[in-house]
Image (cartoon, rainbow, N blue to C red; front, side):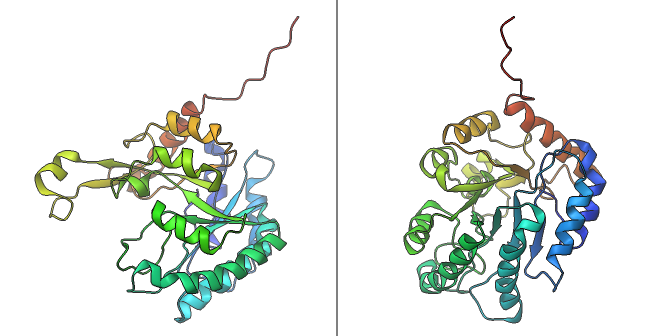
Length: 290
């Protein structure tokens, strides 16, 4: 994943494309700012050039269920990304479901169904799938501002509201670990609904939890770059393959408390090489008999 908003995406892709990355996920935060997405897609593809690099997913992160100006921009951004995904070569648009602010999660379901039933049809007509990131954005079941697709109980609800085949998840183990959920069983149960995967991990400090709990002053969990957290990515990749996942794992950087600032790209390239090892290294075809 490349952390670039809109017009910066092409420039940032060009800057790091030779470091060994195999895919990028350009994304927008709340608004596309009226950009010409067809032109942006062209510039991103030019930045990739003849390298074997995919842009499987675009990100559009905001709250499309509410009615403030930026919320309306987010909803329009989803429509624009769906309509222009092909200019990037993308087949998935990822982001948050949105949420009726400050209300219990279930209060968002009628508005969720209204908005996402329409967007699912729009996306299906374009051959595009929709993937909700499993991030709570500090919300919970009782209240929140951004997203309702942050735990398996919520997934049951939203997939019942929108049973469309092209609505699924942008999954990562980090957002389960930070709420002390074991992410591994989710792959076996929900993996068919994983349309895109983020490479982000977490470190849980169990000694802090035992002494201070999860609501004390001591931080009990840190988001980490893959290779520095608690997850066994060899097991994750194996489970993903067993459920048939064939998409990208895009590294979501800029969260690690250690590998940041001047060490940011050191951490990301370490994560890249770690994930490549965890998948088994480079592909080796079957040797033909002499």
